[in-house]
Length: 221
Image (cartoon, rainbow, N blue to C red):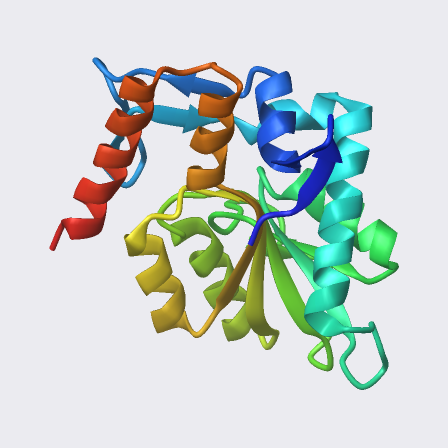
């Protein structure tokens, strides 16, 4: 699901326009980036650049708030929610969303601290609340699902994940399905490369190469 805004009489993807504006998209077809999962990718989206731009940050936050409110229709006592941000990429956005929605915030580390109270989750978990995991970028979904599992094991209820952007990898879709989680995002891989093509940032040949890469992953066993 993408969030659209009107610009120059045309509907464009807000996330795509924002990430392009901050120089957050890098392509490398000849020497692909290697993700932590081991997947080689010709495109890298650095959503962390967005937190340094107040106007874009505000627009994305407002769009995200609208999406979350639509997900729940209304924030009510019958379905109280909380925000669980994934450290570190999801923490700025989780903080912004929790403040805008006026709901509690916790955050989940990738692993337990080796000092102090040795906690993986910071903040107070309310078992009566339904938490939304907040991440910045979804590739395979591993970090978000790991955070959701940790929160569930600690007594929190989790059914949904919100992220700014997803690469739309079939591996992630299958992983979220197995985990019983619903993923919602502002931006997607296909919308991003379509926007880049429309803006003449990439050629039709590069656009096709990116689609081919994605299709190969989709067909992988």
